[in-house]
Every structure is written in C-alpha cells, then in structure tokens.
Image (cartoon, rainbow, N blue to C red; front, side, top):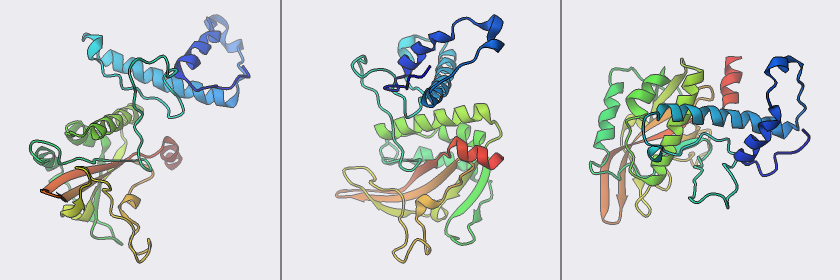
Length: 267
C-alpha cells in the first residue's frame, strides 16, 4: 500500500483498512507493505478506536444523545472532512504540554470547594527542593490523584473544563496501560498566596517566569516537572482586576510526559 495518509482523516484511514479482509485462517502467511506515514496513522487510529469503544461500553444503558463526544485522537488526525460535520469540534491545545486553569475563581464559592479537596494531601509529607526551597514536592500514586483530586476538581471556564476533561481521559488511558504510574505533586511557593492580575476576567499567565538575573538563578515555574511521570503543580492565588479581587484561590497546572519519555525512562 504505497499511498500516503492524504488528509489524515480518521474515517478515511478506517475505510482503507477494509483491505485487511478476513484472513484469520492464513494470517501468518500475510505480509503487508505500508508507506511509513500510513503505519503511523493506523497505529494512531487503533488507539483512537480502542478508546472510543471503551467509552461506549462505559456509557452502556444510557441514551446515546447523552454521550459526551470526547475522543482520544492523535493530533495529526482529523475525525473527518470539515464539510461533513454539522457541529464544530474543538481540539484543545496545551502550552508546552502544560494544562493550567485560567478561571479558577469563576465559581459560586470562589474556589473553596477545590481548596477542600486538597485535604486529601494533608497527611502526606512534602520535601523542599534543595536548590529552590520555596517549592515543595512529593510523589504518590497517580490513581489516588485522579480519584481524590482531578475527577472531583470543579472548573467553570469552558476552556478549563474541556482541557481538564482531556487531561483526565489521557490519565485514565495511561493507567489502563500502567496501573502503577506515580505522580509528582508540587506545592508552588509552599502553597503560599502569589499575586496574579486578571485580564478580561481570566488569568493570562499562571506561571512565574525566569529570573531577570537569568534562568540559572530561577528557571521559571514551567520548568518544574518530571519527564518520566505526570506532574501536578498546586498554586494558591490572590487575584485582582479593576473592581474585583479574590483571595486564596487554588489553581492547578498539569504536565503529562510523552509516552516516549516514559518508556525511555523504563528502559
């Protein structure tokens, strides 16, 4: 099959797979020669289809109209041709593999419920970084973080909600492959309030940048993550904008490593 993936549309890739046919009786005799990009596309599509089937199984017994159309799809693939879809779809983008909340204060309780969720970490010992002792860290099972924190974390900004949903789906898929995956938790500034000014009601930048004296002095908040495991930063914020202020608002930032980074660490 010398053809390239063309427009990288998932439904076209799936339809092309009909050439596999019914070869179970003599499968060991079959040889398939593919364009390298087509092989990548089929591997990506297979992950998508397995995830979609699993989500459908989880939704069994409920009306299909209530099923959230949230698909695990490689960033190179499109679900179908754009003129086919009657409803728009969104592919969330993360900055340098980071997700972070832009509107943690947009709730009736100003984030108090999310703050109460952090009680699950109260008995866990955190250690200060040797070089940057203002930040504290610990490592606990990712499954505990997902069930006790991330699945319960409330967000009221549309972009935050979509991004967190995608993060949680990725984590669930990761745990299905590696149940014992650890997670690094960081209390930024030891969870002491840090000031952020809002722009049009949201946080334009959560992370403190590198030191003006150079990144060697302080590399910036976004540099604090682990390549071989998911990282969650906990921030406590004092927020202000003209005529508005909010104090002690919790926010999270989540970094997911690439599968390649995790596998290379295992090797």
